[in-house]
Structure formats: C-alpha cells, structure tokens
Image (cartoon, rainbow, N blue to C red; front, side, top):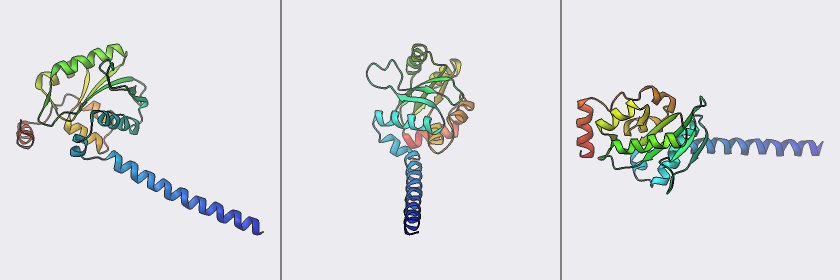
Length: 184
C-alpha cells in the first residue's frame, strides 16, 4: 500500500512537471515565432534564414533545411511544402529603404532549376522594384515582401501567401507612407 501511494505521488508530480514544461515550451515557441519586424531587421543573414526555415516548419513544411552560405547555388532554404511540392527559398535581409532588383530573382530562378524545385520563394525584409515584382509573377516566383513577411511572422500560413502573390505592394497611399517611414 505504501509503495502504491508513493508510486502514485511520483507519477502525479511527474505529470505536473511535464505539464508545466509543455506550457513553458509552447509559450517560448510563440514568443520566438512572433518577432517584430525591427527585431528581424537586427538579425544577421544566417539568423534570418533560420527564422524563415522555422516559419516553414511551423506551417507544416517537411524536410526543411538551411543551405545558405558560400556555394549555396542561390538557395538559402530548401524543403517540401505541406502539399508535397519541392521548394527553394532565397532570403535577403536588407534595410527597409532598399528594393530587390530583378537580377536577385533571376538568381532564384537558376536555383529552382539547379535544385529541381517546383516552387521558388523569395523572402525579404524590404520591397520589390516594379520590374522585379512583374518578373516574379511572370515566372511563378512567390515574392514575400516586408508586409507579407510581417503577416507570415504573425501567424498567416505560407500557403495563404501563395494565393496573394502578385497582388502588389499596396496602393499609392501605402507606397507614400512606406517612403515617409523608410525614406525611399
């Protein structure tokens, strides 16, 4: 009887500790996944690539791995979308006042061919120039600019961003506020 009571108390204590640990890990994962854009701006390039890989994993992407660095063949993250299609991602963490030129997207197009990926995704902390946005739409590249990155970081799924690709980067008023905020 004493052994049974002791065993039950040990089991109950273990369950309470595991429950508290689960809650702590869940809260920590939420905090880690919801960084503000200024926090993202302060990251190194490698940290930004890791964040994008984490967001992909959060959204159910499989076999996600960071491949960025010298000799990366134009890709920073590779993996599979939740629907099974292969993906290649290029990440660029630039100042918000910068723009992404078309040549950056051409490099990603080459990476899509090299890695035999079905989907190419370009994720940036800035915006795309009009020619680069048009290039992305023409060649089926998902262009995740700063505004979409903010949505993705705050819980929107990667698959939901695919449906808004090419919808632009806001109207004239939005672009004016962008220039006032970021100076370009």
